[in-house]
Image (cartoon, rainbow, N blue to C red; front, side, top):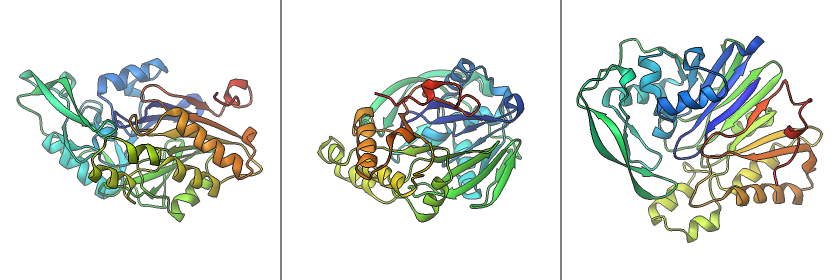
Length: 331
């Protein structure tokens, strides 16, 4: 089983997972990048979009679904999510706009691969939640947009039920975020289990049960509470992030890990979806280590990494026992 972070944060989220003989089952967990960027980052790890078996969607915010129009229309990739989230995806495909993490609408960037004609150049203001400011980006916008095809390839996942996609068993579970019906995922293949928990304002007992099973845990550690309190965000936005349907703080992430700790085993932990304004990799990493150490955890039993906005780490179960670098803790 190989896992590669292609992007993590409000500017886009995508996780690549492959499993089975010769990595024959290849999937994405979220696709919140432009399709060209997504293709380029996959090429860096020797994968093409045509090789993908499907896309798991955690929720419908733009930083998790931006590439979906092209992935569906051109590549006919099936979507795996719950029925409520898929309905929100269908609406985004029909309107060409997605709700961002901050609540603003973000237009889907038009792409020549979609068969869209009469492209014109325009400026579209995008609100980046982590910066809390308007960021203007030049994108290609279409004068006419093709409607999504009938019979979109979709597979509805029921919370708590196991769905098999190739060599990967998928179990979805609800998270707590201000989306229609957000989900986390436990992926099981070849005796290894990956748990993805991002974009949630609290950690529920059901989430803890899934996290406890993970060999690799991808967990949100969005903000430092004091930094957010003192920071430039408007009061309303701060309250949203602090709330039960917002984002996990460093302290909340550490508490969740402590509640699911394996005292006699090795755990790999990726801290994800860091705010560029209200957190730093050093703050997130230090907070997690200090909390674990204070609780008596043996830090030699856990490998902790922080996922960057760009290409991040690789976790490969076939190499874990042969590559010392995978055991080394980050400075």
